[in-house]
Amino acid sequence: MPYIPEDVIDQIAARADLVEIVMGYVPNLKQAGSRWKGCCPFHQEKTPSFIVNPDSNTYHCFGCGVGGNVFKFIMAVENLDFPGAAQFLARKYNVMIPEPEPFRGKAGSAEKSDYNLRERLYLLHEKLAAWYASWLKNNPDSKAAAYFRTRQIDPLFAQRFQIGAAPDSWDAAMQWAQQNGFTIEELQAAHLVSESKNTAGKFFDFFRNRLIFPIWNEQGRVVGFSARQIDKEQGGGKYVNSVESPIFKKGRILYGLNFARPEIPKKGSVILCEGQMDVIAMHTAGCTNAVAPQGTAFGEDQAAVLHRYTDTVLLATDSDSAGMKAVLKDASILLPRGFHLKVVTFPGGKDPDELLHNSGPEAVTQAVENAADFFEFLFAHAAEKYDRNSPDGKVRIAGELLHYIRLLDNEVARDSYLNWLSDRLGISAENLKIELKKAESRQPQVRQTVRPERSDENSGNEEKKNGPLPLSMTDPKLKVVLSELLRLLLNNRACVEKAARELSPDDLDDGPVAMAVTIIVQAHLNGNWEHGAAEITRELASCPLDCSEVFTALTEEPGKPESDEIPLRIVDDCMKSIRTIRLKQQIAELRREMNRMPPGEDRNGLLREFMDLTRELAETGKKKE
Image (tube, rainbow, N blue to C red; front, top):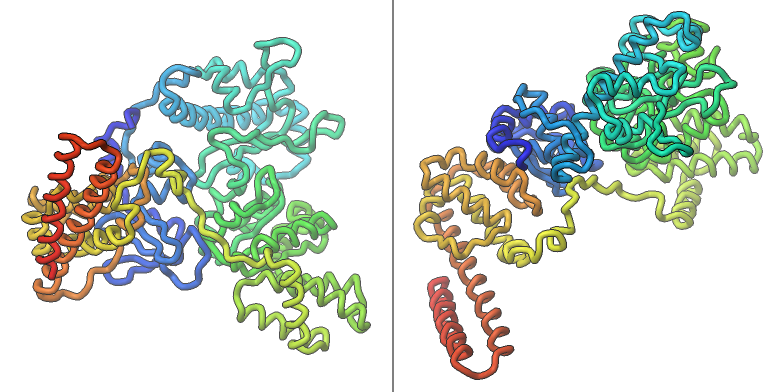
């Protein structure tokens, strides 16, 4: 990574505390011996299997198999590449990264330009958000300011959410950006300008004469904007949102999460609203754990983000038919992930913003406190449509609720709700279970175990991108032997001393586990064995191959102290097994080469080498016996 010097990467790795980092995403992380344990943020689980080793600054999930160091964790949880993760950690731990060169379109390598472009776009959005807010404040006679006053937003929260306005101008924002050192190419990359269809090379602002809401990512960096229509005669939709860019992926953004992050664990839940104004109203009323999907319907990626913070979601949608559809759609996504759902209704208003202005903040907080269990809400809604006392009504109500009960992944929860529904309708629980099984057989694809998120884009493509994989990654027996050897070398000084004396470097390839063995042995030879685990973590920081076996070994709790005799015997067996596997591989390769070669001196030379290796293999086998 030429654009981030290695010494800077080393500084970041030295300062970054993985336990502290993980706690920001796994609130239930608890100390267990010398390790820390919690529920994995990358897949759904109820029994904690996610382990963090503070000594090596590594993590591993024994449930879904993901693992890595602090850079890998940030790359996975924030969906960043390595430079982005390094930049994220550098900001957190006050490590200075050399200022990137301004983005110049096609100049420089693609990788370097992409990295610099993202940083320039972050800066552009941050400064432009401040400019929009300043313009609204300094132009009180504008149409945007007049409309803003009608929304009656508390000034404190208008400032906190940095609400601004785009002037009624074709190029005011573009002119401002260019005067402040940003290029047309950068504005195009951020989709803040559009090119004229009639005149090539002529650009105009994407946002014009609209109220502007900055959109932040999870870390509080401005990545886009949402622009609200000022009057109905204005062209375009009610809301116009930023187009996806190198820094803005709308399917992963939850508006207000940067403010709600610390509040969600405190309150034990998150409130999922429909839009920006609802989130602002909720925060104004003191419900500071409110968020909303941004520019798209709520989806799987956003559910995965929420799962890192809580397992309880309060659905706070509009009290109309569209709001009801949103509740049901969100439930279809959240229930299979193990979330407990409640539904907030707003008496005296169709949404939290309207209720806030009609009845005050106390009414909003009361509505949240009175949130109904999702199935209670669904039953009440179905009972309004169908007669719960008639046979047909019971069938229809049961059908609607069974559709969502079957989404529950927890068997206890399913049985509990089936018994509850049985009492409500006067239908036997056994008959409801029969109908539930029928529903599942008709749609078996609905109830699935949520697959873990995979952030390693090289996973499954290592051979395609990097050529044939090393033998230590493709031979199952060699992988097991090397992994066992690595565990012993990490935890027993006598074992690493033996390996340093007797293990041949020729027996180790460039697979991740073999590399880790080499690193720990070299650390011993350098008198630095105690820090060997940290050295492995640093050296494999940017390895494109699957390092899960290494991180499994690094995060396992060391066993109880025992005599050196048994571990040394196991190390000896491991080294002989490694040598045997290597010899067999070399012999097989020589045999294939000899079969392709015509008789002659070259073939005779290969035959002599073949015989030498065969004798060595026989002697190694005798030593093992």
